[in-house]
Image (cartoon, rainbow, N blue to C red; front, side, top):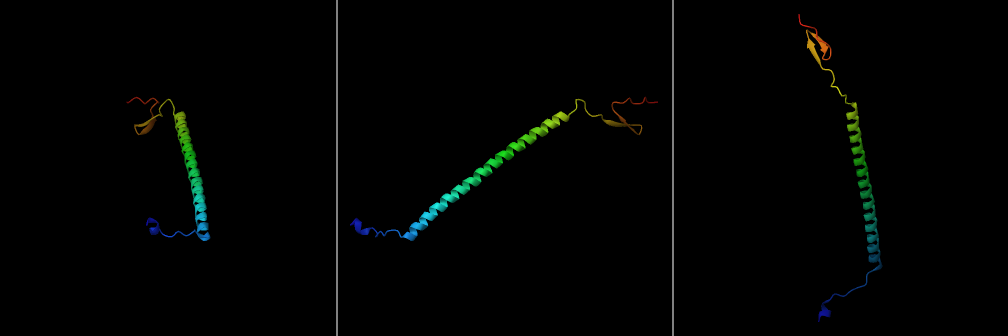
Length: 93
C-alpha cells in the first residue's frame, strides 16, 4: 500500500545534470573570489592600521623632541612698548 502512494521517479536528464554541475562549479568559484577579496581587504586594513600607528608614534616623538626645556618668552606691554619677559624692565620714574 505505501509503495503505491510514492511518485514515480524518473532519471535526471543530461541537461539538468549539466546545470547542477555548472551551478556547483560557479558556487565554488564565487566562494573563492569572495575569499580572495576578503583576505586582501583584511590584510590591507591591517597594513593601514600599522602605518597609522607608526605615523602617530613618529608625530608624538617628533613633538616631544621639538619641545624646549624652557617655555617661550612671553611678551607684555610696558609704556606702549612690547618688551620680552626675560629682558630687564625699565624702572618706573
